[in-house]
Length: 309
Ligand code: C5P
Image 1 (tube, rainbow, N blue to C red):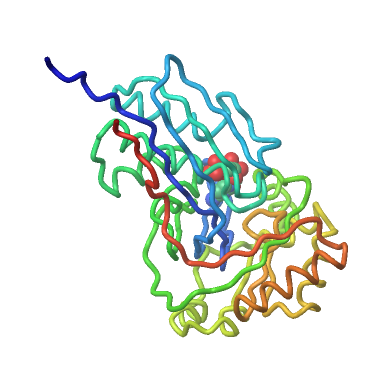
Image 2: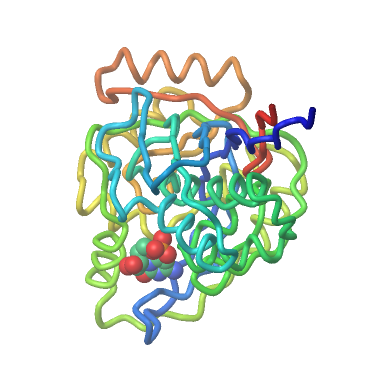
């Protein structure tokens, strides 16, 4: 009697969110994107993405933060899956996403799902792609997607997709203030252009002082270097974010910043204890609807489960 061939089982990949410690937005390029100099840090808010062989392509989303995520061809996980399938002749799969990353929050939730899908399908189909191949496919899906493949702390240039490692010591503790309604990334960039109209925008570069702060491992030093050129645009579109930033600082954060294109606000705190205190204070104040605590840097998209029987 011969054994039945093994069915490739579902693969689950866990992928983190990101915060930009520095986001320098340069001039708008001819392709519509903006030249960036940024430092990403992956933080411990996660989506779990499971891919399984199916008769047809599909995506489903679950978890308390699932509202508002598209389940059609606009979902970046499906965009990534189709691209990989086209290149490597892959069979249809169903992608199930369990969301722990805020949606449209400036934490790269959609990009994270795309990164996780590429890593999961690479595993399911036993393609054996190396890190460079995974990242270059990821870059075709979106500017932030390559970073979420590797995670950690890294510098991003180009439109954010060209990565270089950054030496970072220690673990940083964050409190994220969530909002009910997301912001559209293209709208925030457009608002940034509008606010800077008529000014000469230089080519973007990262600040050496930020790199020194990351090497020191001291959250006080890092807090002093947090900057985001999209913050003014996000606050202009959502003035309440100004109040959130002020409240967090008043309740003891070392530094506060709008995360990426917002509207999530990221607060850096001294340690885990300070994070608990700030989370309680922000929630009790009523200024913030919902908070999440996290730490970083953490690893990028990684397989947590693969059923092979
Ligand atoms: O690359 P991604 O698809 O995530 O970008 C979403 C949108 O954000 C782009 O369509 C563009 O409007 C804006 N963007 C930008 N410059 C960047 C990255 C994103 O203008 N470097």
